[in-house]
Image 1 (tube, rainbow, N blue to C red):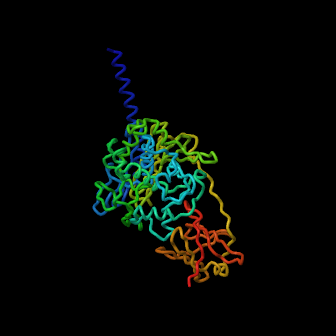
Image 2: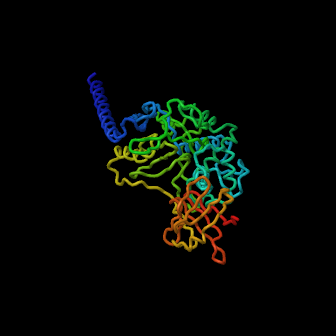
Image 3: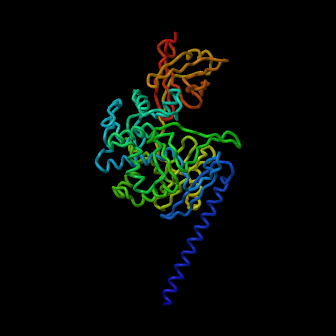
Amino acid sequence: MKKYKTLFSLIITCASIILKAQDSTTIKIDNLLSQYNRPNSPGLAMIVIEKGTVIYKKSYGLADLEHNIPITPKTVFEIGSLSKHFTAFCALQLAEKGLISLDDDIRKYIPELKNYGNIKIINLITHTSGLRDYNTLLILSGLNWDNNYSDEMLMDLIIKQKQLNFKPGDEYSYSNTGYFILKEIIERVSGKSLRQFADSSIFKPLGMASTHFHDDYTELVPNRALGYSKQSAETYNLNISFSTIVGPGRLYTNVEDLYKWDQNFYNNKLGGGQKLIEQSIKTFTLNNQQISGYACGLGVNEYKNLKTISHLGLWAGYTSGLLRFPDKQISIICLSNSPLEISPKSLNKKVADIFFPYQNTSQEKINGTPPIVVAFIPVKKDPIFFKKIVGKYYSEELNTYYQFFIKDNKLFVKWRDFKIAEVEVGGDKELRVNNMCLLHLSENSKKEIIGFKLDENNVKDIDFVKVNDK
């Protein structure tokens, strides 16, 4: 009997130590997030999970400023690009059932695409396809990227592109186009919308009742946090997206549902066992044998010498972040409706620092490929040189004209719905527009400017030709 009393006492003591440690962690996270406990402002919801146990689940700020509705753990947020690993998982499920192969050429399912060479489904998933990012294409076309564009309109824009940014598999370059095409493949193969397929194959089996791909911007969403943009020190405006393009983003969920999703990582209940989970975090190897650092809608890197699985999302008044330490079974998830004020990436790392304060380094290691440097003709910050550029240029791929003109000895450009922007000269090799894109000028044998190539982030080598405007 005495032996059992001793054992019971030991259990109580251990439990007490664990609870005190959890209380200490909770207090430290509370102190970290207390700055967001403000009246009349948007905020965030955070959940921290350790070995299957929720050790922190709190929320701060308002979901609806007009009606003074607070954020709770049940509040639903849009999570932007954090949606991508759900889309990727849908594709993995189709592959596990033998309905597709990740090594299939995408033209097997999307034959209307130009034959650029063998772009595989895995290239779409890992951002190694070379396809130009459609959000950037929309901006360069003079269109607002979060308007209500149909899938057909977006596909038409993609089909117009004459070339890739690079040969498939040569580089990692983040491209929402890849995930839009991936969504199209999932829908054509399954015969269901992505929303329907994800609902039946992921969300319902896991009991994620508050999660869905939002393919109708007019749809009411219970417990939704509205997205906001800060206009001044005390003023916010609604930030509303009218996009219905799902796949690259537009997933609605809350931290309680994401807890269920996180636990499926350690015990997959959706078919394929842990083999499917391992496949989802297998990073892509580029053609030069360099590791890209990106898997199936998830980054696989290191923080403080510990393996991490992570992704961020940012869209129309919302921002989100998942940071998982799989070897420690610790996950930190932050969802916010104030992207300019709240950085889930930064907050998640600060919470991680509470768990791992004594690691050798606080630096994040990110694998990737160096940018390609493109040569082009020298430029001058000179009105005489500017006069050579003046005129109208047309891109067949964007179906857009760029009009260049001089005012007060400065060079400006105007295109479609965008405001006039000054063209800046950097050194002797760069023309920049709004710090957004580079123009690589071309000339004929008479030294006349006849066109340019435009590069912007995940879009390279868009051809513009000078046209006669008479």
